[in-house]
Image (cartoon, rainbow, N blue to C red; front, side, top):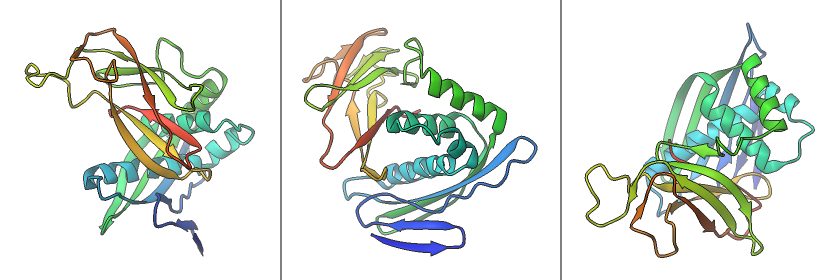
Length: 242
């Protein structure tokens, strides 16, 4: 690993994993806190450029959040890494105002994304307090899109990640699935991070009720997916494509 210092932050370089670049947050003005983040990601050969670009920008927004003075001061005493990661993504996905992707670049398989936006200080402080003290309610789940809801995530006795989810719409995996079927949308995403908190890889798992895969899940059906943690991973994040 090579560490270089610049006037705006610290750049961590690695050939194998995502690379967070400088993230600078300005002082809050009129209840708004400016956030800036940048992330560089080395995509795998099997990974599409579109997926790599989306991942780089998603991580850039997280870097912008966790480097803001509001986030740092509010979470300084919290050591629960999964909880902090979920909190940072909640803020990045739902509470950034005037979000902009300032720049995206591609050099070979290396993708960079730089973002800029604002946090409303009162709103963000309230979200942080609520999530740190209570977390998501069972009724709301951990994450949700138009077809799936993640209800619970925990590690089982073997160290695998057990993800309980619920179908919100009919999911049809038949080869001749009906028009409007949701086959391509019913995936559960898992980000794996190393001991330094850097993203190692993102895996996509189809939401199937059995190991072999049922042809249909009806609305309200609940199932459990098990995902093996790759070697070297310390923490993880389960999420759904919006």
